[in-house]
Length: 471
RNA sequence: GCCCCCAUCGUCUAGCCUGGCCUAGGACGCCGGCCUUUCACGCCGGAAACGCGGGUUCAAAUCCCGCUGGGGGUGCCA
Image 1: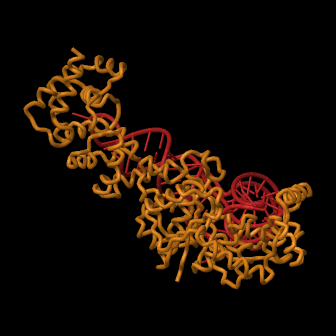
Image 2 (image 1 turned 180 degrees about the vertical axis):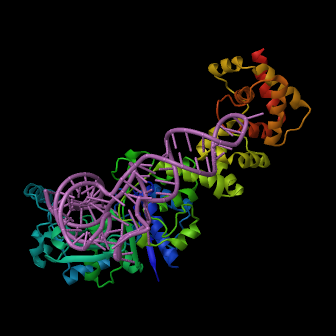
Image 3 (image 1 turned 30 degrees about the horizontal axis):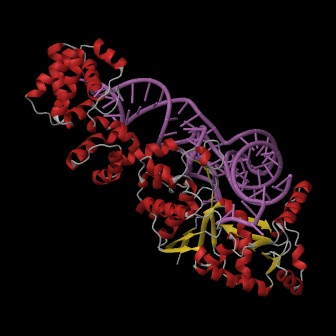
């Protein structure tokens, strides 16, 4: 059975690149009817934070990625210890007493000579007795994995294809720090093996780690899994997407009012496209059905916020149900201070204005006239009202409104038509007068929609207020 | 520096494996038009790409080599 995992370290918010990795890993498992594991990689005590872990979980849930098993590496140190001992016993690992300063020197030396840095292997030759002696003296030490000389390590990556790296390029690496905590390259192997991970799906920044891990799999007698290294996501300037590119965490998009369905869909299309189809809008179920790692592009992709925006708009106006839209947008309207107690009214507004915005924070802006009665009219818009025959138009409107019921946008259009005929004004004068009087803006939602949805008393009140000032 | 990976419109991509159907298709964005008595939505049209140089072949976006460019890695981070 296929089993994949997503293994973030809780050192920051869920990044878009990691989110896409999680999605692809999840999709691949589900596509094959397999299991998906979430594992928190918190072996680095310094940088791991509980609050980041909580955010990670929240964002994953929000995106609709559900996991079958959950682990935290900090709770598994005993297990790792056991496997370290195994490697020590079999001679695949040895204690190293070199200090960070000595190692820095070696690195500088290599840099100067223009060769790839690798640990000198100074402590390799230590006899067990010498090592014991140093330990007794309280000298701090790390444990290193013994890398076989000159070995060419090859693997077939599911995305990148054939990859070959020589062991001489890296040399003996640390698997246990001097504080006794195990390092990433070691625990990842123990965990993936013990958890039965069949396909390791992760970012391509892990390619250089893969040969090291393969060596550990072998030393421990574990079966080596399949690997799939996904290209990274780039910012507009083609460098790896990072904080300096602005909004790059899932949280940013959640807070700005994007739908998780849309973000999920967009992220899938970054580096993947369904074979033989030009469609772009897919539900999660369809993606599970269609997704395969072999269709993932091996070149890095640039994140395009504008396209995500467009897709979110498509979801808002065409894909999600009114019920879903209501549920998702409500917190935004509430925190803007709008009165949303009348559910029927709110839904009526939403139903009629779905084509007016692409995100919820934009919706808060565009929908203000439906919820807030204080209309601020800027001086330059006042002069526009004065330039037009606004007074005549608006008073005619109020007069007609008084003994008539307005239910639909059509009703408003008919009313406007009558006034146009009676007063002989230009259509634009009518609409612009109404727009400024009712919203204080020059653009926004359709005035026919606003006027037919807003309670009549409020319309009359707003217009009268303007008429007073105009006279 | 050294190691690894990658290369089609500004961006995401189809086509590449299995050369001819490619006058290179779709999408975002951009430009123009239509619809519209307002604002949007929608619809129609347009500009826009095979990085460069060598091969192989009757034929190359597709196969091979080199160059250039981009990305990643080079930790007692993950």
